[in-house]
Every structure is written in structure tokens, then in C-alpha cells.
Length: 186
Image 1 (cartoon, one colour):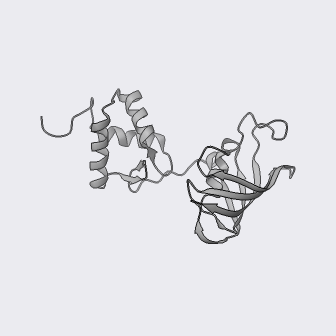
Image 2 (cartoon, rainbow, N blue to C red; image 1 turned 45 degrees about the vertical axis):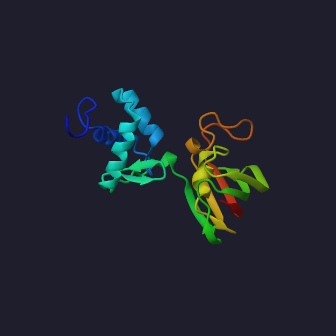
Image 3 (cartoon, rainbow, N blue to C red; image 1 turned 90 degrees about the horizontal axis):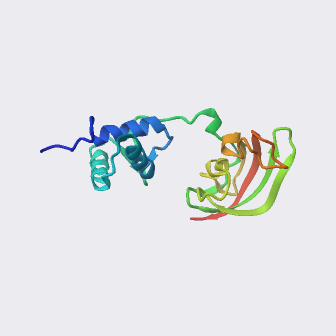
């Protein structure tokens, strides 16, 4: 049989695109997510076939690849407000910007909506997107330059969520941070 194999109605690429649209993840869907989606929704687990399909789709301009994430050209998904960090640059800083995987050294102060300071540090080191801090920090600090200062307003979903972090942080708290990027290494 010629042509791409069908995995039960619609090509593999159609299913991949369905999955990407369903997830509507800003920046695209990871290969891990696409595999899980195909297995759960379509009982499809042919990894070799999937990788070939993705490679061809990228070459044909039907999909865009950014590291290990795939997106549909021209389709941009805006995260819902409860998954968006409100970022204000106070000072821009200089030099290159830190990115996912950078190890950053921060000075910060965290406040609740009523102004109560719940945490602060003069030197705090972590790796962006390394799962070491709340998601709002990963999102809010990415793109900063050395010497930069930002005000971050982080919704509960990207902070400590429904549980909070007792006793300092109540459930469903919106967090306000002033963050200074002292240095970083890639």
C-alpha cells in the first residue's frame, strides 16, 4: 500500500494536529504529550512512524518544531489569565537574556496581595524550568538580563494553588514578587 498508513480514520498527522489543538499549549506540544495523546485517544504507539511523520510535517511546513515541542504554523494559543504571569520590567539589565535551562542567582521579596512579606532572600539560586520553584517564577524570570529587576504578579495556579503554603501563604493566593537577576550561567 502506498501513502502514509492510517491509524483508524485520518492520518497520523491529522491526529497529531488534533492533539496540539486540544492541548492549546502556548509554544506548542511536547513530543511526550503527543505520544501520550496518540496512545490514549487512538491506541497508536508506533514511535518510528510518529517521528517520521513529524519530521516530514516539519519539512513540509505543516508543523513547526522548537526544541522538542511541535506547533501548527500561524496558530498561537494565548494562555488563560489564570495561567499568565503579569510582568513589569522595572530595570531591563544588560547583556544576553537568561532562558530555559539557565541557572540564575536572584535577590527577591515575595508579598501577598495585602502587602505582607512572606519570603525574601539576598541570594537564591535555581535552574529555570528545572522544577525547583513555582511555575510563575520559571515563566516570570525567563528573558531577564543581568542587573534586571521585575515585578511579577503570579496567579494561584502558577504559585501555590488551592492548598497554599501554610502558614505564610493562604489558599488561592495571588503572589507579588520583586525579583532582581544578579547573575546567571547557561
